[in-house]
Length: 593
Image 1 (cartoon, rainbow, N blue to C red):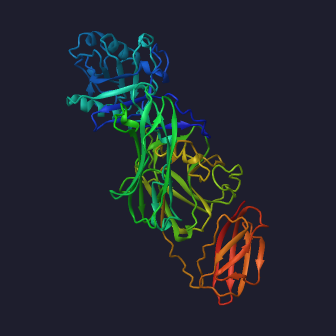
Image 2 (cartoon, rainbow, N blue to C red):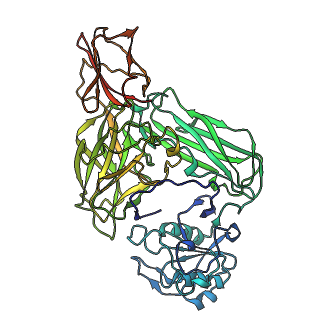
Image 3 (cartoon, helix red, strand yellow):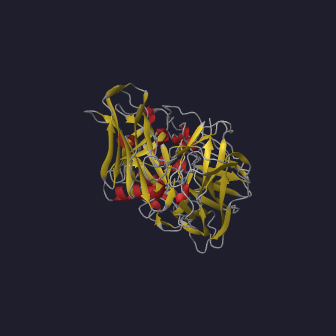
């Protein structure tokens, strides 16, 4: 878990090195705690004489053992009591310990002495690696991950050393104390194993939301998920029988399954695997799990931790979230983030859909965290909704701009924390639900001027690969002191949730819903004239309210009105059709070429 990150205001996605080395900490077994763990290693600190962990030859794959230096005193410096013997600071005690450190990765608590001293004493007893865990609880302002300085002994340390948060350290310790063998890998993975096919989340197409209202997911035209990913051969052996697959389950039952035939993939090579989109005629509420898998036909992958990636989408009645949520629609992640300097700032999420008018925006959920142990009670933030009227096709359109996003929101309300809801999702309901328009871009933001407040974000999914696709739409935006970035923080998505409901406000019996096509329209726009007579008028307005096109007689081809928009510049326009029988229809249309 990452906490309390201070990031620069604007970060942009860089080039992807397909086989770039990354130092990882992965528990291989037991299966109950297996997987990757966030950590810092000696490359993140100073005054270490360690080998280069980017070299696979320096990686370690061994069993964990708990430090015990024989110290019988108690440490209460971190808000709770624990034995000083875990800290490994008594050099004589380590050398005479009854614990056999030879060929083991030693688990050591922070506290009592320098990080380099802990690692050096363990190394002298034959340890092949060290994992130090934070003595401060994760909820403490000093909890989470830090970069370790080697201190007086660090330059003598030649074994790998990693640092993890207290919670993760306690997970490891509980298994070791119970007598369960814990085997961990620490080092550069690429080339460390003979047979090792892999994929990473930054090169996987994920579903575009993790929670989505069913009312804007009526059929395959309203909701469809592109599927594909890059797979790599990170091993030291060529593969002749690699395979990849994609599966979607709905409430546990398979509704989509595709696999490749076996194929070859040489050392260091990568291959993009594309699958048909997942699309259905309807999407009932429930849990949709999207799973990608890679493997070796008839063989065994030596490092299976990166052979499978899954995303759970919760189709529901009224929650829209880019970040992961649990079955109760609570955020699964709480990485606390804020800019490094600001007077005021806002993380925001983007909403845009052709059927947006079916919903009203009723409120938001979000979470925040105070640094330095400060109280959050009585702190206030603003909840703002902006209309984004810049014309662009998608995130990768060279013409994308935030010029229409100002500090004048369509809706602005204040939320005050009434209790110590640190890292807990809170709900703000709008005084009046906001009716939304089809094809209108909305930006929903949490605006904060609290310099000691962090807003919660998620890193999974990060949407980094989705954002590179030609059809990508913005996910989140970031505002710092009135300046907007349309791509937020790469790798981080705010856990802001939009609360929506079916639009039953001010039902007008004279209003007729019309769904034109194609959108965007380049030349001829087809307008189905359902339940409207032939006689009447059409007026088209730009977003400044200027009429740019009109027809006093509706020229229909059967039940379809044909409108020539080829003379209109690329932009969003409001269409207003009024028939002589008193019925009317208003809708937005994007014109673009």
